[in-house]
Length: 265
Image (cartoon, rainbow, N blue to C red):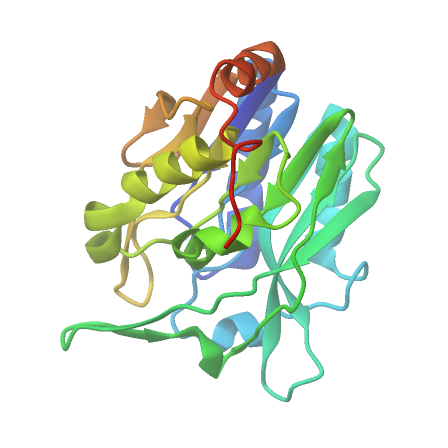
């Protein structure tokens, strides 16, 4: 099965971002992709953080979700919409939600980002908790016979998040990693999560300079259960595609049964 990560430089106009996403998904379909992942905040990298709150939608009800449902149905693919802002009970906040759409356009799963990013090095500062409500549940998506652990960006720094209900075949990691942290840690974190969980990792990233002046790292990639980078795009809009071979995953787990050999203290 071919899987594809979409890399985007999203801007401040939702309609333009969706049009770009549709074009890149179309490119991925032409390459044979059956599972396609969009990046975090694919629909909006605004001029200010509050812009994401202003476009928040009710779950299963809104133009962004409708467009993703229609896109999945049009191409008969499993489409994982990196993240979409969904309404939260907390005033002036939204959930940063990853949604899975079936080839029939049905929403099969929702994961709300659990770990909210905070960073301040004196030159640049980020505090997602100012506009986001944290999710409170680890989820598993089911795509045919494949179990998927959805995660988002900052979740990658918390290995215990991926150890609960393990045994899945694929980790999703849509992200908007900062250029600063991405240079230092992005590939290292992704390959480590693949190795320790003996599964495929698909990472779809934001890239380049955005309307608020922030810079994201890009380097979308797909990694196999041995930690090998199968495909990668460093910068710019594009598609990263690779074959997900479940027999190869099973071979790795059979030859090196690390998941079975774990000891809990």
